[in-house]
Image (cartoon, rainbow, N blue to C red; front, top):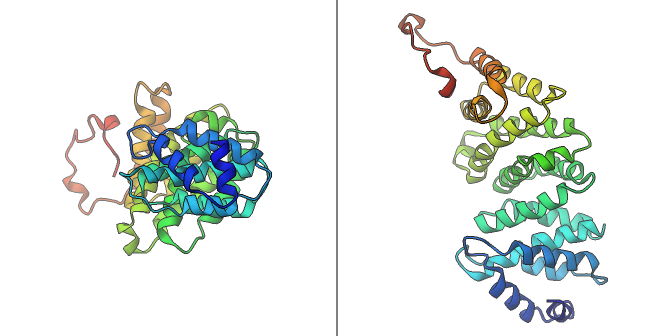
Amino acid sequence: MRAALATAVAGKPGPLEDLLSRHGDGHGARPNLRLAAAFGAEMTALPGDPTRLLDRLGANDGAPDTPEVFLPIAAAHGWVGRLRADRDVEAAWAALAVLAGDERTPVRLGTLDALTSFARRARGGDVLLARAADWLELDDREIRFGAAAVVIEVFADRQTLAALARPEALLDYLSRAIAAVAGAARAAERSDGRRRLLLALPRTLSTVAAGLRASDRGAAWLEEECRTATHPDVRSALSKAVLILADKFSGQGGALGERLRTALEGSAKAPRDPTRIRPGAARGRSSRPTR
């Protein structure tokens, strides 16, 4: 790869692209993320300017069922490698936003892996959150929501959460992401990026509530979000997070789940006709979503 990389930096990217496509298996069930990480490590140590090469790899629009889809995955790891070297920082973050919001599943998974490796480093998660906050202001709706979904997935990992120097920054980011979903125009309900963001929320919210349990910051924050939630899609995501925490296999016990469920039920829209509520209708509610 080093020989092919030297040739690519000199202006002949063909051999490198062929090598990455053949061995990356980006269209397979298990993309070769070790190869992508190795490529990122080479980018960290590279003395020259590889931005044109990384732009070329990231711009490849290969279909998700073709070997060429691995090229943007390699680009994501390459840009993270440049961040580790503290070089081409602005270009790297701009490119990673686009790759995180890509409509192709393999590209998003590769970018998720690259950003997770960055966030696990000392202060890496805090830097990612600062940049991701700017991504919430992007004009392109699909990239804005899609990139937020990937960032939220990064912090579903407890190891990444534990590496944060300021967990409050994550809570603030999640609040902003939830507000962006709730405040989006009605036409945004058809957005795939918004749908992915909503799907990413429950696992991360439950991880935050459980992972910051010692100080009760995560649980208290989630309780407040449950208490003030009114948008149906947001309430659905919160309800799924509560069910995860209330599950007996979560290790959190029933008290936290019941506390959050009570807060979420308290913000529910009142029924049109309360007299139609049947006695005993609340049975088994601990395993049922809250509307």
